[in-house]
Length: 64
Image (cartoon, rainbow, N blue to C red; front, side):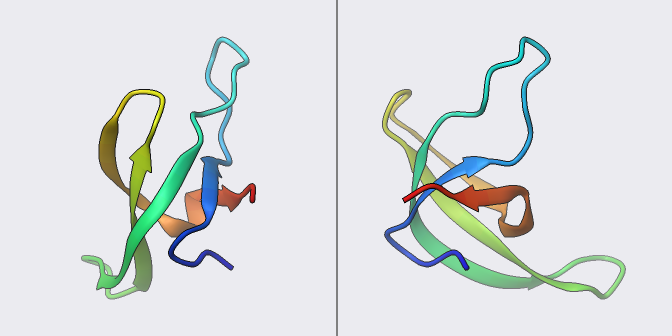
């Protein structure tokens, strides 16, 4: 289960075979998409690139 403060990484692998960058969970929000499904999005800070981004929680795995 993802919580604020966790280190996360994408479950997907890039076409080059590399795994996604590690990121720190800053914030979580529950959302409802156009199909009416409830899900969670996560605001992640990526230290390597010094950027923030919103990602779907089910597409991430907890690393630490």
